Length: 434
Ligand code: URA
Image: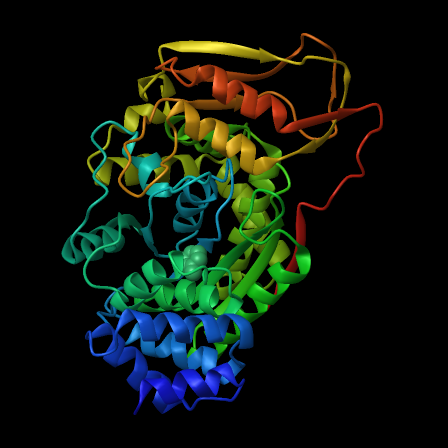
């Protein structure tokens, strides 16, 4: 196979065979194809796209580039969940204990935050003593014992994605639907889930800014799941404002605890329950999404979700007392109230800018290796459509180092547009693609 031929054919919009895609990914992973040729190929895909069959073949080839976890020794249908990333998006910490409490084994490899979005692993690290790195043996044992384990990525899963993603990052080829879909799905499939629920965010705080591209991405990922034999459902959810009311690592753990205790953001709860009821449905423990919703409500009101969270924290070496006493989580030195500069309805929130303001306070990373401060962040007091009077609290900044405070405050304030007109309300859940 001559790589230059594959590049040329894709450049002309012609179809590649599954065998050609498989060999290309194998050769690239093993270093037999140079980055400059793969970069040219990625750019051809960016402009020409891949059809369904090619996208499935690419994903399968990426899965086969490294280890694949076999969970067959753990009884039951293992369901994973993935979010394309947002602001104040703490769904995993609410959902995983609830779904595990429903008797469905949850094994999750989670990531760290980058840019304006947070990551589950950073949030969990804010719990004193919590271990985010588990060996396969530890994961298996823990899932058998308590039905839930979350670890940062272990082993050699999808090395092809590691190489391709870094290359796409520096060649302006990240924003391609078949490339994003194969990247996300290859990691979920190699991690061994039998079924996958995807939370595809759409809006000004998300990767996908408009509904039509979010639908396209969701459908492509569902098609990949089906093509590779994993039941997959995608839920398209709103990211035109922060999902919950907390942005920051320890703060988001606190919010997850509060939702599991029956309080907290009702929007965060709604998205968690929508995703969770699809997980229960895919696992076959309920017959309809409505029944799933009721089951989750019961697990929440009886406190079983909260108990599962405590068991999970203790199993991974963390201090379960944080659930009763969230003040044991890292606390920032200063709490500074940010107030409204004028009267009006909150008409628009540039969600990405809210995430970036939290990042300036130290809650997020600019590059993969930059340090973060687990205690800091933003506690929101108002949502889109709320009326504000001048001087009323809009948010509380949790701050340790004041160096970037003024810059973060400016960024945050600029994210809000006030108007004397109330904005039209938007759906929280746009669509469920099966
Ligand atoms: N997230 C991924 O894992 N891969 C992409 O290509 C984009 C976002």
